Image (tube, one colour):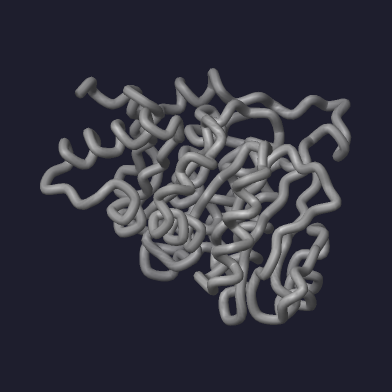
Length: 281
């Protein structure tokens, strides 16, 4: 195994594209977030808010009906499309043509949701970030791996990763397994952890930002929103993943002196996105 390439500020400065002063929302990218189920609409809120707060021009969120008023009142900047079912996503149908899609936060694993996800994968050609319950559904249906477009981004935490690639006895074995999986299925794996590592075929990137404050509910939902936003803005998938994890971690480094570890929550990641992007400008 080659040594990981560190994702440092110098690396990120080469990836990061400052906003064109003459841009408008129509060319800043349109992202779609597919998220939420009864009791987990918060995941859709976090992912959607992070997406719009990361520079995307337009965000449309696809949720079950029970989340409609919550989304409309908590994030008025985001457009909302509802599935026909009250409590879970029963189908995935868009009238829009987004530049990127993030799917999975809080969607649950209802049989109808699984079927909707499979039908979606069969036809989807849009750059995609797969997280949370969508990863768990995927790992239970390994034949669906063939439906993934090249450079699809998977963002598993350690348990989700284990369901995808199998268990490991050492960090080296984990990297070997993840590398084999990435090469076989032509996907990018964002292995969330301390530190977060990104596997893209033979290449492994290791993030240098972030701290233990990020070990909090909803942190991953926010990361999905950030990476989806960057994809929609035209970043190549591997660059969107690198910039996304760097910015995500940087928010915790910026906020820590004020919040401490214990009281930092996922909403604080979103609240500090502005300062994190300013640190790059």
